[in-house]
Image 1 (cartoon, rainbow, N blue to C red):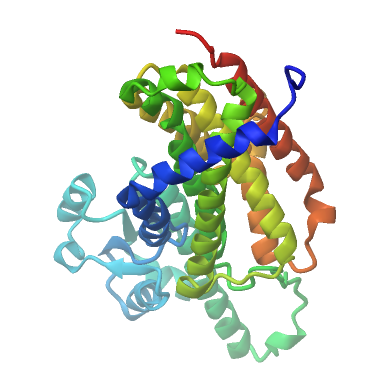
Image 2: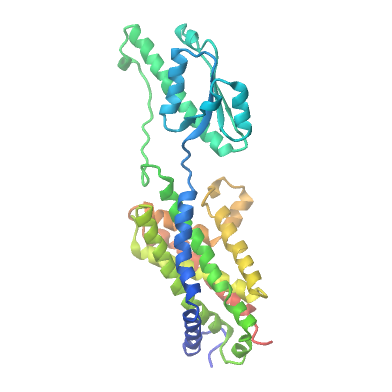
Length: 385
């Protein structure tokens, strides 16, 4: 007999065989487990984006001169704005359109815009934004400021030329930004690796969250109790087949992300495979713990969603940077396994020369969480009725 905390592979293998047979007898569930991440990745890969374009705005041009029309045309030509023609130059209709979400902003050009520019005066235009969508409004303000700055710069250069001054002789400081790893600033390159971590956390946790509960509901739990298999051996035997399935899932969704969304992969493949195994082990260990506690499959599924999907979405850094969260929330985020896998995936996909030597802190934390969940599952499992 082995010590209480040790594994006897001779007792683990029969449990593994039993789980493989269970999976084989339910091919539909296996198909869903393999296809669901791909479908969700494609769906959310298109739905979730930080690239805000075609912001619909209404224009009220009180000046209606060549200068003001040229200024308004800059917005339409920028590619970021779409003009709402139905309320053009009508403030009452524009306000109504803003109220019913037909437009996101109202650009008003004051009367005297043209004459003020000719008289070398500083002119102010107004951009009224919909604060019910602060993210869109913030982006719209940034785009509008950039368009206005470019238009203003053009006027200054025109005035300078009229006075016979060479614009190149005017001293100026310009910033020349250079973006590494994602030069085109495509949000899909940022979103897809994060989605892989979020979706696999949910799928992997769900796969194992029903294992022990299913035994209870089908009445086969008593048979397990009557065997000499120890709790830790039972958990290991049940976990291993699903780790293989989860690992295959990660490979599939990663390939889909690269081929379908054209997300580059620049890191070390071996590091990716090792990190994936550790993450799947951790996610499924959490699902196993939930399964050992839940009284039925319904509670197990709800508990898995609450424990995996919500924390992974909100606290992993997928949408909001962890560094911008309150201190208490930042501390809580350290117990979210998806945070470490998400960090690893974004580095591996986008940054060259990133390997296990860089990601070993995340790997060790994932391994720690996985072992913790499996051991706690074994402790929660009672070999008695």
